[in-house]
Image (cartoon, rainbow, N blue to C red; front, side):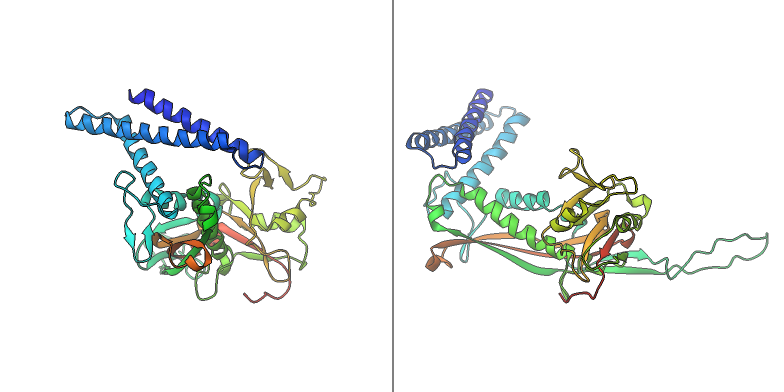
Length: 384
């Protein structure tokens, strides 16, 4: 019974996606027949979910063995209920016990855990430097010790028997990560919310994820003086000869700034305009340095390594950092507080809008400067 119901539910969801995608591709609103069909599909899916839940409850009452597959469906059912409850809450619908009650806050309701997890996961999916950095989820301060070989050297030399060795003292330092509070706010038009065919949950997830992604990525790449510094304090660098152009030799030299042992997971990060400029660079035999590669994340490789672009990276102007190259695990990122998301229904009522606000606390600093190198354009460094 469970298998047939699950297959039917999946078929209904697939059909609903086909109807929505067709309207999206054709850039039109849903017809009356399509809207009616989607409403019927929604009701049928809800009934199937309730049936599966009741079946599981009766199985427990009869002390039957619960298999792993139905247990997974119970978890999926919980996410579906919370998603529906959140959607109904934003639209101002009175919730009942079957839909699930949301935890009340001072000026709204806390988004269910399943939806908050989707927002956090989406941030990691679309922010490669955050995903590739060395992440620590620790409350309070975090001290990362490192051995400064530039100031202390372990003496290794030929020695005669019965002669004392010359000792050296190891000097350990530490990188301290604290925590800086930051918030993100997305306001949604009530006109959109009141449109019953609009996928409000996906919209809020995407908009909140994009806002947080833009902010975190900027701090990791550019940093803010007195707050999160990110890669801005990186010392492994070289300066271009020009303030507005980069040569092929400079790109090759920059790649050599990272030790071979750290080259395996190295990537390039630059502004889209910088990538466009590098498209014209050739090596000594006339081959373009930037080449197409369908196996690369964005279809481009530079000297065999993937190329990522970000609007947060500065363009090639006087004194700016135009390119980062290396293994981004050399950047340490610490999150002290898990993301806290709330819906603000009353605060923006005079704007005919609903707000969704997110808080997080994090810090980021260079952990291993040998893993990453930067190319700085010639000229004075602009003020942040």
